[in-house]
Image (tube, rainbow, N blue to C red):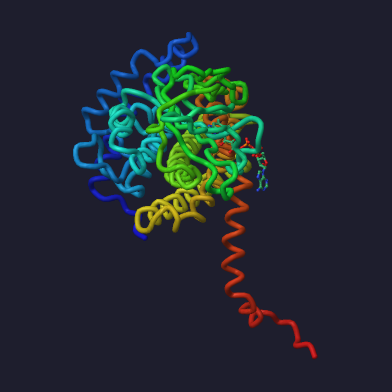
Length: 416
Ligand SMILES: Cc1cc2nc3c(=O)[nH]c(=O)nc-3n(C[C@H](O)[C@H](O)[C@H](O)COP(=O)(O)OP(=O)(O)OC[C@H]3O[C@@H](n4cnc5c(N)ncnc54)[C@H](O)[C@@H]3O)c2cc1C
């Protein structure tokens, strides 16, 4: 494993950083003001996207772009430091067409769409003209086990008819969200991992209703985490993504890269929180001392640095495995980063908020927003506990293969 940045990546890092400093960070206040005034997408988003695209800072996340598709063909390892820089501002990655859940959806379409589906959906997504959502989770069943979902996708002549209720569907309130990738069951009687399929549902199809945009920790995200009902929604059979019964396998393929991107951005958010914490601790005094001179604060700074660097190394290892082998080989590491990094993200933000005093929970710093998103990430793409269970299962399976081998390390006297 070799994690040094190539000259190409160094150059891209410099350019993404410069773009952030010149065009994104100075507009943070305006972004919040416009969103709070109900203007979303914000007035400058399309101009910034055009600028990023013109500068070649576009679709940096997709390693397997084909000839003629817009973007920079980077490996996951090369993309990691760039996503980290974008993660410092909550809305920045959309400027570079690198935001969730569109990135995961583009990956999915890139791998499994038919030529006609690619033309209709992938081309405008890669171009940043439209946004998309991925609809799996349902309010009525524990969706961390995706075999539980109940939405039905029933074949009827040349069509499929969809009925079900989904919630927490990110991006669904975005005015440019034109596509829902819906996971449901085509054959409830098949083997448990072959019952599901995915289908492409254009937004605006009769029977699709956005019931509400669910606030997260009482924050409303303008792009939305929505509850949606699908009532007798009819789409052509050609909208099926992959084959009938392949939905579970497709979901696994989608979540690998999606999870690592979230973790890369989380490290950026944690790094920003640490930098803010350090600055505040050096300029504010209580009881005759700068905050950093109080032992506890120094300890928080040190702990945060250790945790962030550990987290980054594990993400880089995971990215390397994804590049060198595949998502299957990186399964354990993907679960490890997904269980670890949102916790590091929130722990560092939490310490930084504390160092800022009451200001830390106000909207005058980005910390409260970053903390909130870090907390939500402990559910999105699978709750911590499910990933911990998956890691334990893989460790135990490996342990089973070498059962008895540890006896030599025991010091207990032999028994008769
Ligand atoms: C901000 C946000 C955005 C989201 N975006 C999307 C989206 O775009 N599309 C989408 O489809 N979904 C989305 N989700 C939903 C997310 O994927 C689900 O919340 C998650 O998969 C858990 O499902 P559930 O909420 O039904 O929890 P449940 O399955 O009901 O689980 C509840 C709790 O049980 C515990 N648990 C579960 N299994 C185990 C286990 N094996 N061992 C120990 N404990 C366990 C965990 O603590 C878990 O939190 C989003 C969620 C949030 C918060």
